[in-house]
Length: 129
Image (cartoon, rainbow, N blue to C red; front, top):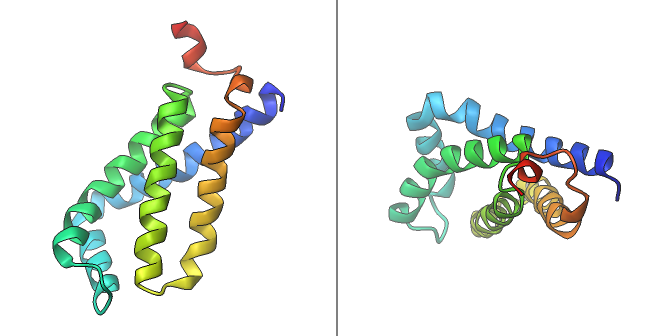
């Protein structure tokens, strides 16, 4: 993979995460209530869904900012991948099968960012070395 392809891959994943967080933070309580409502009737206990729903937008936003800047790219991608694992687990328990493809695509992007990290040519990470 060349550095231009990697840049596009990193920016696409970063903008998606940044956008997810950015639109949810201003309406945090409503987003949390939506997640709790979505989890009703599933095996997910509300005492886990509530803190996750309040933390998720900030985590998404932080991952997005780091990826767009190319700062701590490996760590941001790892955390992003694990966030997708958590979301996929919750989505499966809620039987929301229509949300899975998007989450799996995000997970694949994070895996590619980690796999092809040596191609991360246009990044703040390189200025830190």
